[in-house]
Length: 295
Image (cartoon, rainbow, N blue to C red; front, side, top):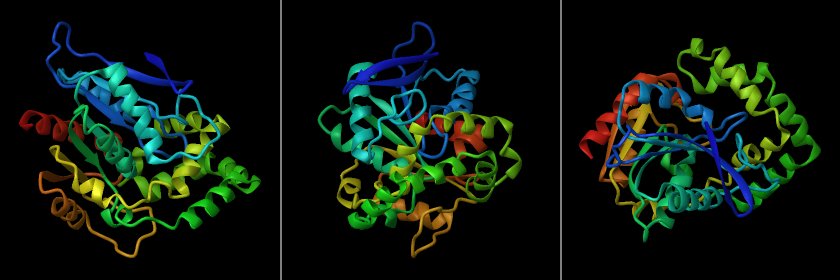
C-alpha cells in the first residue's frame, strides 16, 4: 500500500514492505528506481515480491522520486542532488536508521550525492549498484551549455511531441527490446502496461527530460573516492550502455574499473542486460541476500 510524506511542500510517495513481526534488528533496504518513460517504484515490484516470498527479514522502503509515479511532478529540471535531498529527508524523517542503498543504472549519481549528504548522519550502511553506468560518464562533466540547450529543446513544443511518441506502446516495446532486456520475451504485457500507465500523466516528462538532457553527467570523481561503505557492483552478462561514450566496455571491464576506484567494492555478473531486478529477479535477489549475509 502506498504511503505519503511531505517534502518541500511536495507530496511524495513510497511503499513499505515490513520486516518480520517483532524483529527490529534487520537493516532495511532503500531502493532507488531508474528514470525513464513510465518508470517509477513499480520497477522494483518483482524484486520486493520475491524478497518477501523468500522470507528474508529485511524490510524494504521503495520510494517514488519526485516527478515519478505517485509523487508530485513539478515542471522543473531535476538534478541528482535534488533527488538526493529528497531521499536524505526520507531517511532522516521516515526510515530513521541505516540502510542498504540499492540503486538502479544511471541513478548512481543520486546515490553518490546522498552518501555525500549523509556523511555526518551515517545512515548509509552499504551500497548495491545494479548495472551502474560506465565510470567515464560520471568522471567528467558534460557541457553545461549543451545540457541547457537540450533541456530547452525538450521543454519546447517539440519535446512534448516527442514525449507523446516515446510513451506509445510501439516505442516502449522497441526500446525495451533493443536497449534494456537480454531476453526479449521478458518485454511482456505487465512491463508495457505499467510503462504506459506510468507515462500517462504528461507531467512525468520533466524527470525524463532531465535525464535525457544529461543533468546526471557531472564530475563525481572526488565524491566517488570518498565513499568508504561496502559496495556490491552487479552487471548483467550482456550489459550495454545507452549513453554516448568514446569508450565501450565489456561487463568484465566495467566491473574492474569500478573495483579500481572503489577498492572496498566487490563485483559480480548475473544473467541479463540492463534491468537486472526485473529481468533476472531470482539471481538478483540471491546476489543481494548473499551480500547482506557477508556485510
